[in-house]
Image 1: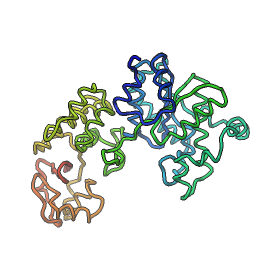
Image 2: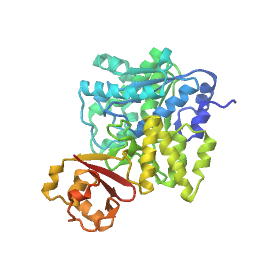
Image 3: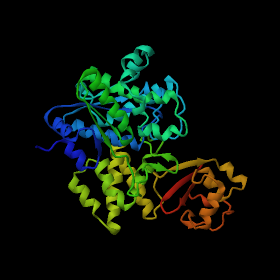
Length: 409
């Protein structure tokens, strides 16, 4: 059979589980399939975990299939218990709607929405006005509580307490799939591996109510070679919004990943041909740094733009070559009058957000992990004076690769 998008996703390492592997592969090869992925706007930015799903939608559209990005304006009002140890705090409709608008801006960077080649739909349109008793009679009747409780997303929460509110989430997501099938002939639902139970529930509901076939596929969560979740930084999640994670910090995250993760990330997070991915992934020693530069540049270019990627790369190169003249490194301002307060290096590290506690700062300095203007700090009581600012700037280095410019104003 001729190669299709299923083979592309498989080769690049996306696919984790399928409801009907052979049938899905055959379907994707013989017709244009409408599929969907859901995104609950629980924050005002998408993060790198969502980016995997966006890449899948983009690969699918490039091969002629039609993506529906579901904004979970309805489901977010409950909160998905998957991959969570506690109940998510409830959000207002206004906050959810504002977050959803931010998501749309990212989708438009990757997907072509002209002539209905892709759709963005909000599940609030059909969920928020449901009649509770009618919903129970028409949809709830098809769900076995015993079976639902075997799902991983519920099992993980049973000991700590699962509210009836959250227990409804699976039924609501299944209903989304049913409604999309009804409205747009949507035949497939994709998602992260933690969505497997919800996806199966939706395909099963379509089969029971409409006697039609529906399919599901889940994708690998972004993890390191050691199985740890990627995308966590000192400041929290690796966000796609430049206001929450600067393009420079975003670039640096990928520039500094472990050698063992380079090939996997190139395959999942860029559109480079697989032969180039394998070539870069096979580099060893100092040469693997070139592969990391390519990875960091390509992802930053896709998420932000080429100009930001070039600026981030130039800033990183200047720092790695011990140059400190770049204007693109993270920076903050300090009023000159603060110098009258007898500041120490610990105060400066706190001010710039490079440390969370004074004890962390003292430990870093004792280990030789802090430099000011390329000179190692030996004493955590070291005073900071106007002389430490060259042309009104002080460059602070934390560890091997983290730099910050403090501007005197």
